[in-house]
Image (spheres, rainbow, N blue to C red):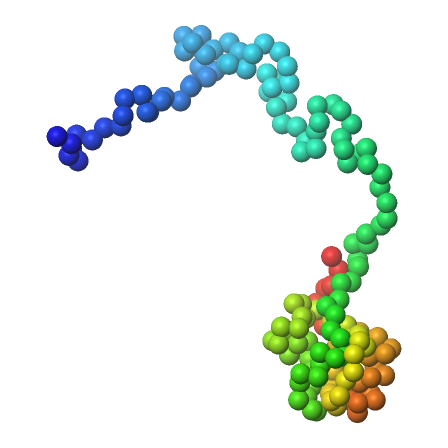
Length: 155
């Protein structure tokens, strides 16, 4: 009968770990199961670079390179003027308000573009405005103000 005091693992299910490099008497001395020669037989030579392809020219070196990605580029969150119609008249639109309403993800850099029509008078704070956005906001009786966030925006 099986009970807690006589439970045992099944026969052969527990295999002892191979202990290597502990002298000839262990049966795994000498080369310590690494073989005679080659890259993985020597100490410190087993690790290869991530893109190593056995000495073949790696694919990232075979492919042509084009263009340039500036490490200092600025990525703006874009909001069109027509989306600002959801707010009440005479509201101050700040990046925090836009984020709370789910219009942007990041309050660091916000740019307002002039796509669509604006029917409400709003005061809009943003990092940048397009010329057409400024024209449409002022034509509706609103104001545009540059919002400068002091957070480092470089990537």
